[in-house]
Image (tube, rainbow, N blue to C red; front, side, top):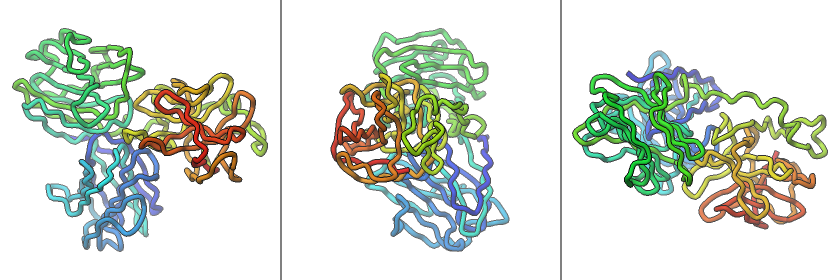
Length: 454
């Protein structure tokens, strides 16, 4: 039985977002019209973005929209598809660029569209509007099976951990990769292998194993067992989800960015899985408030009296570390792999430098001294307008958002640049006339860039 997350949405078209770690979400909704589902890279309403409107236009039709622009990608007549007096069940899936939605119990979608330029989905949002409020029951950890064929089923990761329940006689296999495929580099975790006698951590499908521990009777064909896999700064840990006891632990001296997980069974075993889609108790747990650290860390330029942190329509800087992404973090761009990059900043050599946060790397990066500097401790921009304006050189438009200062006390602004398939955020230094970005180990300067506005 799947866990259920209860959500209420007001008549305001404001999405409530939750992370996902598989390619689908199942839910029941009670609303007279306009059940809206958003699929995004970050926990806020920002492009790229898919939207599925179920029962829109007075509960007469449904559409799929990309990046909040018209014309809609597909539109169908669905009179009476939702109901304000009873729950109706639906599912939404995204797989290989195909976005589809269907009714509970029906395998064939009632609406679908294939995106020729898909992006990785890490969050789902739900909302209602246009005269409608809604009550939702979003299923968490819906069960699925893996056959006895050693073929991984892949999904995107949304944080530095994966929680799951597994029921099977032996050979519970989990992999962590930088792509939705069985390619190197790859970490593999085998729980209850060798006829349920031992467990291992393997790197790039090579022997000897990095870790081998005896685990007789670890798995059970009749009962679900819960486990948590975590990755932080190259440390791969496997814990018993019930007791918290560490089953295996290994540190990779040269870690790679993890963007996807895979699960499989084999060697005579079939498995039944529940992958936890949402954070603890179905609620994104906010990080502790960053006590007036912003005032201590940031010397505000003129116009920001009292040492208050910079604000852009409610924007604040929130302390985080080791790949943590606070709820509401601003997505400033995306990496070459399609992973979202969040607007971040960190202290370095006496400066407070805007840069980027790549959650799968478990750190933020800031440009300084000609190199890309990784930072385990950083601040993430939360809230604000997320409005970017193209400019060049030393032309800082009025109202640009100050995001830090140089070691000499010069205000630094938040900029971004399109480079080698990425949109990478960094620092704008007016006296230098460029936007510097951290990229592939280097600090790169660009005279043409976009700047974040307050």
